[in-house]
View 1 (cartoon, rainbow, N blue to C red):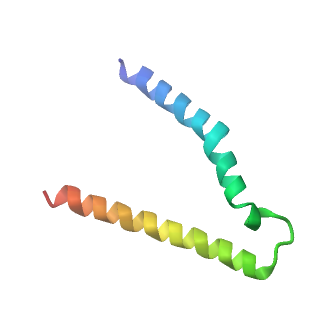
View 2 (tube, rainbow, N blue to C red):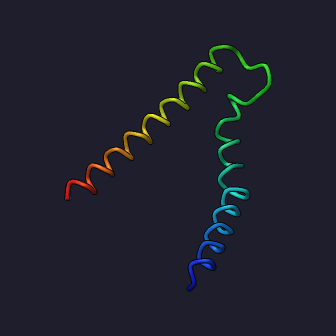
Length: 71
């Protein structure tokens, strides 16, 4: 498969997965935080959840890089 076609197919599949499945699932999972006029405690919990997920993803990426370059 040519590179340009594989990029096109990969982008098509990823945008369809995001648009039809992953983003709606994320909105359903985080509806407790997204609701208008949520309490301050819920706002802080939502931001803390995002910060923890971001820190976890950075840690996982660092571990993967260390494992790859440590071979």
